[in-house]
Image (cartoon, rainbow, N blue to C red):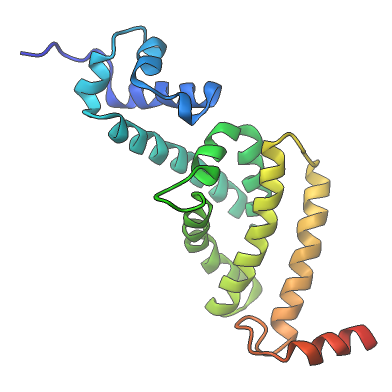
Length: 206
């Protein structure tokens, strides 16, 4: 009979997260986790079977933490602004986890960002519809474009380019107001069926 594992699954995932936070996702190996736990590699494989299984649970734990940041943002007075601010905070405070979830290659794609965007959209779009009184299609367009702003700022934060909260609010509010006005005042803007040349000419020429 194999010896009983003295570490719980949750303790091992927590230790793996510590390794990722300090050294990055690529540094998470059975040996690195064993050293973090002060044991041999046997308990790692006894508990998870393979490193891929462990990494999947570590990713899920990181995503759960990311969701907590999102939910904290959505509880602010202006939900989507809060979401954007907390998105950037996650990148700033959990840069290694941000890189793992949103900047690492996934299944042959350029990265996990698009999957994360889709996941976040399902959490945020209903709040956008309620708060801004817009349709689901309008909310999805608004979310996509504003997510690109938030993701760009967050990616800068990971590289050490950090804006103060006041600056973040100013940047995001400017984009948000312009986008929301376009959605509400230009018929067909959200689904790209409007006459871009005419609208642009009217804007430029007053």
